[in-house]
Length: 399
Ligand code: SF4
Image (cartoon, rainbow, N blue to C red; front, side, top):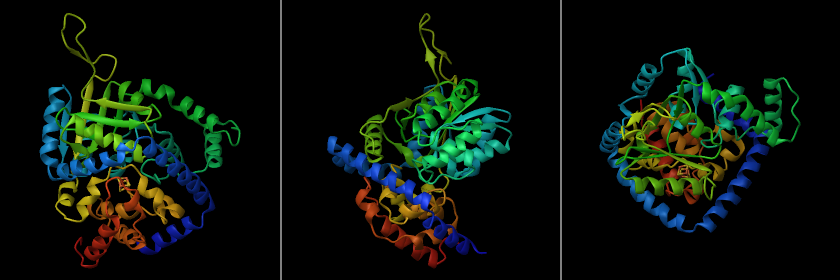
């Protein structure tokens, strides 16, 4: 069967899958209520989003310079920083740092998904634990994420109960989400303290100070990036902005549109842990990691930035808002996707993942209805990008 036939079958099966529809309709309802509430409470976010769009437009034109500046700042903070031109370069750097036989605790990272990081680490003989609850569920189900922020969005509680009952060998009570969360905590708790390496991505990076902003609610990132002796972060170059002040604004707009008034944790990481408490002598490696490595990955981003229409894909904050408004995503979840989802995901599939057949399938599935654009804090014109992408694919521009 061709990839198109496979895709059609996958997406039609998903559209007829009642469990996906139940899980998605619950999630969409909650997302809209929470986001509207957060925006009502902090109306300044709407104005700030306009400012952030300007920050991102400018930063995307200067990604290379910003990456170099961030590398210098991180090295000044006694971390190590690298620029990977390609996905393979990124994997080679990580391979060199990690080696094999390690226990790794990992936070959710779309950039990691993009280069299939967990699979590569496992192939090298490492034991990797996804620590985000949704990602942990997906890892245990041997599936791929179905949403950029809520990877297990398509899995209703009944299925999680079955899964965790199987893992623990104990019959967990149905309908008890608290018990499910407690089970995940128990399963993962000791791994943070036994791990050799913690891995993360970042939501935004300030080039002037080399500071990574990582937004989360579960506390898993705090533990994964704080407890092990080594922290490695993989970051797409589009996450760079010039200053700490810019980065804060990007972060605030991201979490508001990701349906949070305020997230439970915002970690700012600029280097390995240090102390000067004994005779003002600075020693690196105290309670937190003694090594901090950041890999800034290009992998097609600077090429994408050159395209007048498609470059908008790089302004994306990964708040996930558009996916909750997409009528196709509402019934198919991440089956309408590759590593990234829906209309905007088609651009990433074509230009970043070079998966043209998947990109074409997604571009022609998109209804170009524009509901995503209305919700998007960056006002990314996904229908415009999709129409352009269809033209480029038809012209054979990617072959
Ligand atoms: S395209 Fe816009 S709404 Fe969708 S994830 Fe990106 S920033 Fe959020």
